[in-house]
Amino acid sequence: MHSHSHNHSHDHSHGHGHSHQHADPANIAQGAFIAGIALNGAYVIVQVITGFMTNSVALLSDAGHNLGDVAALALSLFAFRLAKVKPTHSFTYGYKKTTILAALTNAVVLLLTIGMLAYESITRLWHPEPVKGATVAWVAGLGIIINSVSALLFFRTKDHDVNTKGAYLHLMTDALVSLGVVISGVIVYFTNWYILDPIVSIGVLIVIVAGTWSLLKDSLRLSLDAVPADIDAEKILELIKKVKGVENAHHIHIWAMSTTETALTAHVVIDKDIDFEAKMKVVHNIKHELLHQNIQHATIEVESEEVPCEDEEC
Image 1 (cartoon, one colour):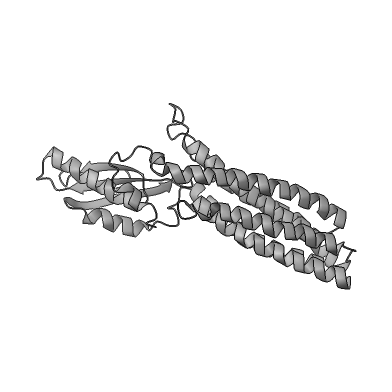
Image 2 (cartoon, one colour):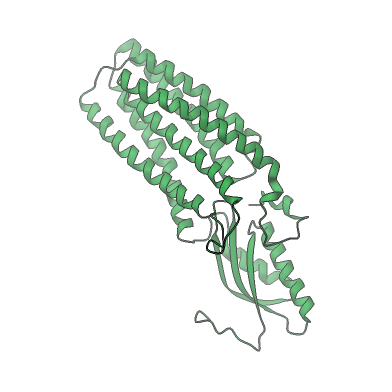
């Protein structure tokens, strides 16, 4: 939760885009994303072609898996790019939210692909078909190398952003999945036990569903402007109340502007006996505290006990 806080301590231009402060990791990560997309994209094409040639649903499922990764990597790269687009009069937040919508689309497309592959694999359980085990093993072996290399590209920057960390873990999981397909291909080659191919395929699909489910859940949450999963609204409320000069706070709304940026609005009752300058200082301190909680865009409405809030929510 505090992964970004060390960057913020010296930055007092609160409320303006903070994309500048981790320029270096972002650029390194951007290179990693581009390389990862190129490597994995080429590999998916190889897998799909050989999957049909060798008649292996395990390879095709693994291709579906890797396609999901390419989509996730492309999405994160897209997020980096879009975060830099300047807001306009019509799009006052820029295009940050597209990162969330893309994550949602990504999850839905993956689930549809899984459905098709699952149908094919289950059919094969009853009617196993010959599979060219040796080729399957070679192609999946290539997958272990590609996924491991791609994961290492992210190793340096994996602690800087949820997208890069996700990419790193995802690629490591994939290397293991490819290992499963290699073992299956080798066994099929020596034993002609063809039913193993759809069994492994179903295993791979279960791994993908597990990964995609959380992506679907998180992106749906964020689309509905829920509080991001790594932020505790109760804790934030307490934190605001603890700031010196704050008497009370209510009406707190916290939502994600993109997969990496969070916004908050709150009504804060400030000690009526302090002057305007001091009140502004309190607001500044609140924003500073929120920045350490990874909330970059805070809008604070100041109230006093005498002038109660007129909102319908009050």
